Amino acid sequence: MKFLIITHAAGTPDIGPNQRTYFLGQWLSKRGHDVWIVGSAEFHKYNVKPAELYGDELNQRLNGVQYTWLKTRPYQRRNYEQVLNQFSFKNKLKGLSSRVKAYNPDVIITSSPPPFAVSIGLKWAKRCKAKHIFEIRDLWPEIIMELGGFSQKHPYISLIRQSIKKAYSNSDAIVSVKPGDLNHIRENYKTKAELKYIPNGFDHTEVLDEPYAIPSLSEGALKVVYVGALSNYYAIGSLIDAAKLLENKPVEILIVGDGDDREKYEQQTKSLNLSNVHFTGFLPKKNMLSIIRQCDVAFLGLKDTKANRYGISTNKLYEYMYAKKPIIASYSTDFDIVKSGNAGLSVKPESPIAIANALEEMLSMSPEERNVIGQNGYEYLMRNHTFEHISEEYLNLIDSLVK
Image 1: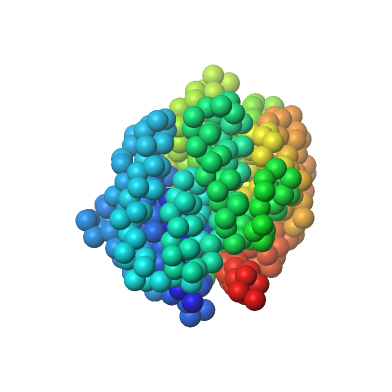
Image 2: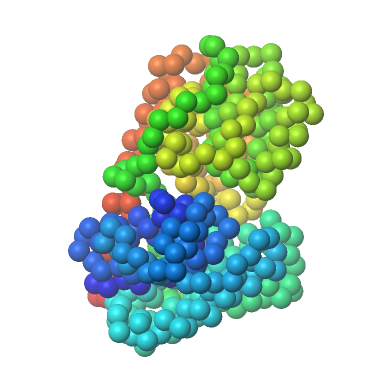
């Protein structure tokens, strides 16, 4: 079969997040299918822009998968400039119509967020008599309204809702990486599509793993690590406040990453006069597993949003599991894989006291006891969240659509 995957965030291991479509494409290719991925050349989460790697030649074949990055409108700030970038991606897609017709895909997957490209994907699917799958990683506009404080009548929200309704009404299938999203869609939207949960995952065959020496931490301390974006969504402030409660305990916290709120968190640490919290700044993904393995416990916090109750899908969770580290999960969800996999302690979101208590519980355990918990997470990951498994789930879905 021929697959066309349309995704604004077409990351790769060299470019950076988001890499779900990259690994899905690799595994579909390994199974003998032809895959073409079309993405935006401009995206704020890229570590390196495609043009910086490939110059003006934004058509590359990577490990058997054809990639095309469209030259979209650049943006520096996540405001109206980012919205203009999102719509420029949709408009640039139109210029590929003749190439898509010649390629003649059997399956078109349009991945959101953002959802605006779905109208193009649906149009091409109809023209090529292909099956159209709409994949969502977050519920839009619900998550945007909650995090951004937008009203129902905001023009941006109205445009998102128009795209979402069109996708739900006309797609052959809807895939979500969060199991609870599907019930929300059934209850709030009209759709005849087949709905399927296919989780996010980790590729265990193409692991980036280069040694990196972490900063010198206190001898004998429980080493706690967070890796990833330093943004308000990940509730790092609660972890720092928990560190204040533990400043007389042998607990050291290592925060690895960069982001819009890094300066705020560093200032918070300074104002609390903490010596048990350390920042490394941005480090390459190739060093993440090495850093995590040198620590004893991994932390994942999320803001207490309504959308989280439908499920949690964040790549750092899978990295923690692959590194076999017990996890402190500070969030609220009805679908908690840390709890399902017995991979750590799940505690109240945005609660420094709950986080501190969980870290004290980890501190009271022997290394052997923590190792058992980490091993539980690793085994759960390998059973449920490899891209070998995810690609198989996609092919099972397509088989059901063509019967």
